[in-house]
Length: 212
Image (cartoon, rainbow, N blue to C red; front, side):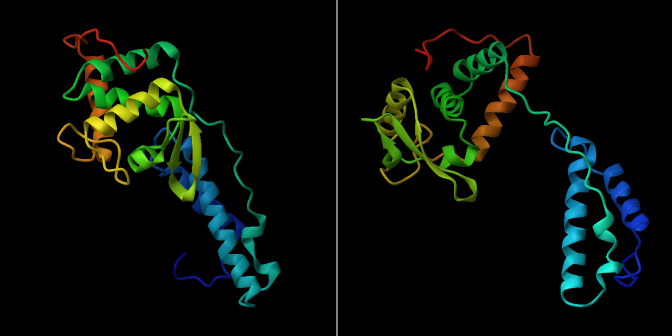
């Protein structure tokens, strides 16, 4: 296909390419059986041919991409975590590991605000408004917002910042030695949760946590 002129491929050729892309798509929870990859392929192909028509390289009638049909969008496989599973996850995170207080705070932050990992890492003490129980989140694609939180979460965020000496304009979430956490902490949390749920030797110790 790479050696052919732009006006040589037919609709059947492009459909064959799309089928090959779908068949060889890497399978994961977000792949939707390859239909998402096919949709991106068709969008990109249409864009290329639209540009070719606009610049006069080919005639509109020679544009095979306009005849391609977008695959039907499938329902997302994502779903809310059931309450009992969420409780198990939080219990393991808040009662095991080398810094259970930090991990419990991280999970509580995500549960209440639904922020992304980047939003949690970008949070600063300066972003906390304890009077109105608001935190300022800065997330991907320039999405910034004030997010209401519970008085309990606000109190723990303030205590965390004070105890771990977080600079007012620096990263809030930190280890006990004052070093800011990185995205690896999130990986560590989920690896530990997965290992603990699979192991009968894991016995979380009851303690007062952030649900109080």
